[in-house]
Length: 276
Ligand SMILES: C[S@@+](CC[C@H](N)C(=O)[O-])C[C@H]1O[C@@H](n2cnc3c(N)ncnc32)[C@H](O)[C@@H]1O
Image (tube, rainbow, N blue to C red; front, side, top):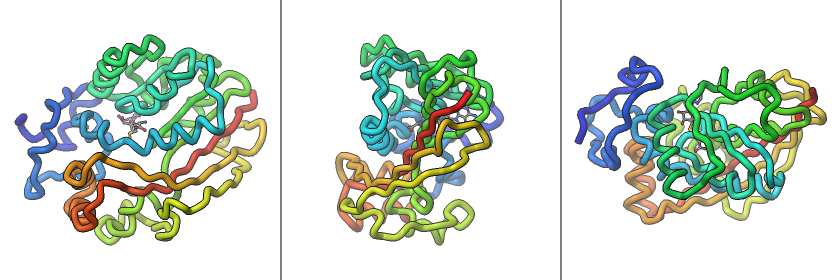
């Protein structure tokens, strides 16, 4: 196992840290001095294989986006692309996908994945969400999945009437159905908790609109869709290992006590057409 790399180390290394060997995160134990729970940039940069196993809710978001927006033959930017869950799914219909992430290790993980899957229409590029290496008016859709949304930069790269897309949790659902369990332990991070009913797989979707979004001009109000999605991590031990490493021992015990490998999420898709 490689020596422990702290969150501080990754900050000092800027965007150029090497990833840990695959499965290195499994050797972690809860007595380690720097647990780094909730440090998602650190997880995706230092343990991209762990982040990739975890990021299944992004598949649910992309499946739902597919019902709302036809990506066929479009040029897509996936900003804060991480290990490629959204980019790979978008590539099934898109003409080209530019997957942009700040961290070299994540970009390398994504490039390997894309190569292994034989995808010739995905370009992984290293860049910051605030100043991407993409030209003005060059993309039809800018997707931000569980990632920083810099409205001004997204507006710059979108063509007139291009689509700005944000994918992530609804308020109070930062950790899906685990949110209520973890809230007392992480009061600085979890400030609201959605109702238990919203994590019921039968909870109906909800639609709303946003009249303004990040101060950029829109053709019409942004549409917002909330829906419930159940993710299956394969088996209970795997789910406990993944969620325990990311969120801490309470999450691990929650999974083991329930003896299930699933987690329900209440997810939100926000889509708007930009006016230029
Ligand atoms: C929570 S992950 C989401 C990954 C992916 N979009 C998904 O849905 O699975 C956030 C990603 O944003 C990247 N990131 C963080 N800060 C960034 C920045 N300033 N510019 C670009 N990417 C950034 C991180 O490296 C990480 O891979």
